[in-house]
Image (cartoon, rainbow, N blue to C red; front, side, top):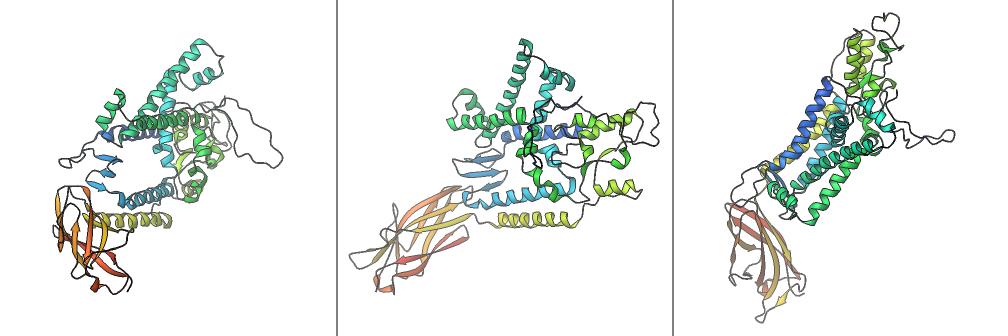
Length: 481
């Protein structure tokens, strides 16, 4: 019996290749073994992290959020344990995304589609949804019979229960997404009390809805047709990359066999199709490496159980490199080669980007100064002949303590500062900035007209405090002479 329900296939003109072919839904059978256990542990780890990590606490002192990992959109901050990222440091996000992409390439070069098979959210949630189906409807044979059975009250009730459980899981997925953007305990309480902002419920609906549709109904179609990774994965493989492969030199010629039958003069594959039935995308791995293979290795567990039944050695379907499989077929020694030009290149990029980010993170200043010159008007001529310019000054205090700074000018002799709301006509201004915040000040600089030699004069604002000094260059404008 095939592992898919029958599906209609549209006729093609001669030489035409379909971009999409609906072959029906896959009904993977349950298997037991090493890789199935690894998938269970991967599911526990990924879902556990997704659902529990927002509740982890980290003490940052009084007045600071104590959530260990938090993307605070209203406060325009991102927190990861002891690291605090400000909006102007978005390049850290760029570096993290670049490292994640290259690390995915490195994983592929070493172990094929191990991400797709064990860690991808689509794979994890699809696997979880399939387990719900098994719990409510039964194993593969029962699910196939259930799909073909005519509509009845019992069938509707089971379908309703399956979809209800899927909705609960999807809602939990959407809710947990929102908890990363605010205090998790308060957010969870507000969501169930109906006091959360409308945007929160919209995101729960969108994220949960996609989880429900993609993991519940799209399933393997996402991996085969929607995910771009399946299209270019082979570009990162070489003959030493670990992939799920059928050892045709050992399995062919295949054919059915009895338990007590001799396997002399024939292949070890008994054509039981257990590997096909176990595959969540419904492919036959005996046809070679395919883009629809997500590398979950469940076919290996299914085949291993059959080999044990016939008293044959395991490994007819193996998670190994093509070089090793070819070497075994020729009786040559095999080995696992991790250090290769390809992997060294990927690891080198990760090391460089990671080192740059680390150095920048360790050496970044905890204060910053931004000065914006007023454009309208550029300057004002005072009654005593002096020239006045206006500036918007922003002082970033990136430390968890209130701090006092001194602001002075360089390059403009005889100039005075007037801070709105502060002292007037001073040589240097004292600015107080609360902890972990941006102090915004409006000030005027007045200078004698005699010191201007042209329309503009380059000057610098100097910010000093707590043993640190920051300079920002700008211009002082005046009338044309």
